[in-house]
Structures are given as structure tokens and as C-alpha cells.
Amino acid sequence: DTGVSQDPRHKITKRGQNVTFRCDPISEHNRLYWYRQTLGQGPEFLTYFQNEAQLEKSRLLSDRFSAERPKGSFSTLEIQRTEQGDSAMYLCASSPPPGSETQYFGPGTRLLVL
Amino acid sequence: GQNIDQPTEMTATEGAIVQINCTYQTSGFNGLFWYQQHAGEAPTFLSYNVLDGLEEKGRFSSFLSRSKGYSYLLLKELQMKDSASYLCAVRDGEGGSYIPTFGRGTSLIVHP
Image 1 (tube, each protein chain N blue to C red):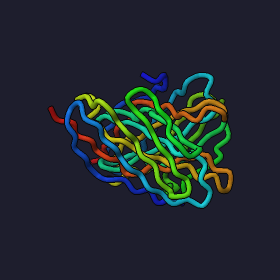
Image 2 (cartoon, rainbow over the protein chains, first blue to last red):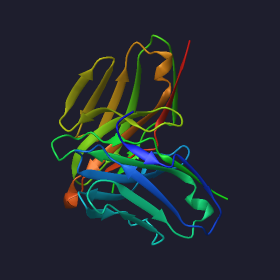
Image 3 (spheres, chains in turn purple, red):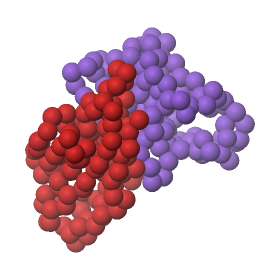
Image 4 (tube, chains in turn green, cyan):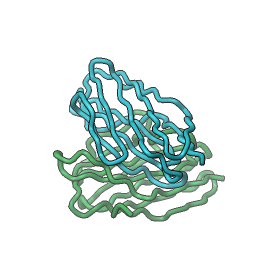
């Protein structure tokens, strides 16, 4: 247990539905990342927050995806109008202010779109 | 962006030594990471290299050559629990980005 928590751990939804995932980083970590991982692949970057500011967003990220970190603590990732291709593990990671390069990953949310 | 290449799968014997290679191409290298990921679990941090040379941490060591765009992860005295995927990730600092890009991972199978 790295101290990063994600909820839910598993989500099954029907195509076209909206889903929202939550990530609670380690409390003193101001940097937060969302990744997506499919079987046999490494984690693929989605978006990055420093405190409450969303500083980077992957160009591959569809406009159906949105993320927030309103108070600089927990973050949410929403997928609207889900598609079968969205089925993946969604990983959240956090890291402290620059100077420590380690990313601590949460257990992930496994999404299955039927 | 980065092109990261690592072998898809490797096998080794318990007690042996294995070296997992990673080659990459970046325009503004700013650090290389190795992570371990067991099946169905999240990645866990193993090592970080930003300068050339060898970093040793217990049974695991990581080497970096920036001029060659090359790194390796060395695992000694292999144990069955070392069976996992090993992810190489490279950070390209051009443009001020701090986001590591991950390779596809090397699946290591340790057998008795």
C-alpha cells in the first residue's frame, strides 16, 4: 500500500454511460497524474496536476475525458459516453514537490465497458 | 516524444542474475525510471537514473548511458517473487514537461 487510494476498484458499465473515478493522493504530494493501462502495455499518460492546476493533458485524450482537482487534494476523472475501447486500468499516481522523483501509484480502477 | 524499446519477455532461473535492457530516444533527456509491476497490481518504483553510471540498491541495480540512450536493470539472486513486468520510463524535459513516458514493459518469468 503506497498511500494513494482509488475508488472504485472495479467498474462495469454499459456503452454510452458516464463514469467517474476518484483518486486520493498522499496528503503532502502536490503533483498528481492519471494514466491508462491496457493488457501488455505500459501506462499511458492522460493528464497531470500540480496542486489544483491542470498543467498537462495528453493530445491523445478525447474530449469525452475530463479531470479535476478542485482543492489540490483529491482528483476525479470522468469519462462521458463510454466506448468499449475505454476498457482499461486507470491508474493514479502522486509525487511530492520537485526534488523527489518517485511516483507512487494507487491500486487502479479497472473499467469494463460492455 | 520518446521511443522506448525493451524486450517483451525474458525467463531466468531462481538464484541467477538477469539483465533487462532499455533503449530510448529523446530530445531532452531528464531522467530514467524503472518500475516493477506484478500482474493485476500497480507499478512500484525501483530506481531513478539521471547521470551516467550504476545505481545499486540491494539485489537490484540500474545503469544509464545517456550518450548511448541505453539503460539496464540488473536483478541478482533471483527469487520466484521477482516474476513480474519491469517497466522502463523516460522523462523528456524539453518544454518543461515532467511526465515520464513508459515502455511496454518486460515480462520476467523466474522458474525453479
